[in-house]
Image (cartoon, rainbow, N blue to C red; front, side):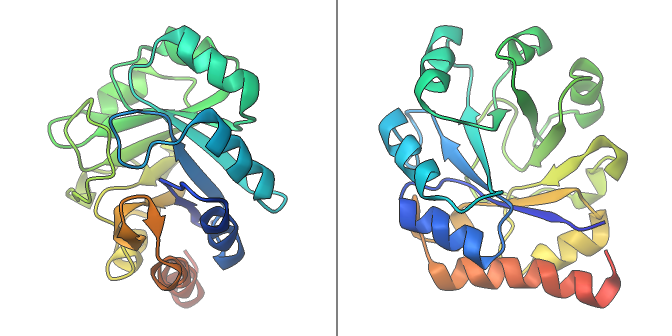
Length: 209
């Protein structure tokens, strides 16, 4: 199984294009205003319009009002929604899109979240506390990860220096990186993005995972 790669917190079209060309399968767009990586619907639409084909656009929300999510979906062609707050399953499924549910592993229970969100396309395990926005660069004990049958995506504290180890230990469906490949919040560093994706592909070439 090939580990998919998501680069989150994209704020500029060129950064999204470079991430895709470097090997990312998906890019993340943050619609939580308190985040330094937040983008407007107009910015997000421009970023998606610049992406090459077959790259998935993921929209990140944290306990957003349903109408606010619908207004963004009306103008931004998101492929997948990513929910980082305390959103219940019926909320997550109400928008008619595939969704990922984040699990804050600093006190969170991935098994409980998996049971409460049976229709989630993936669980994104992050190092932050439950309900926090993510992107903090905090890691967690990868031994807490669920079996890969749950479509697990590992996030939190991943960068070029440790992503290979995370892939070897957890064999996740995907990995997600944001702050570790930046020169400033929301500004991606091309060299770090390329190093991150190359590490994922390198460990798979050597191990077959």
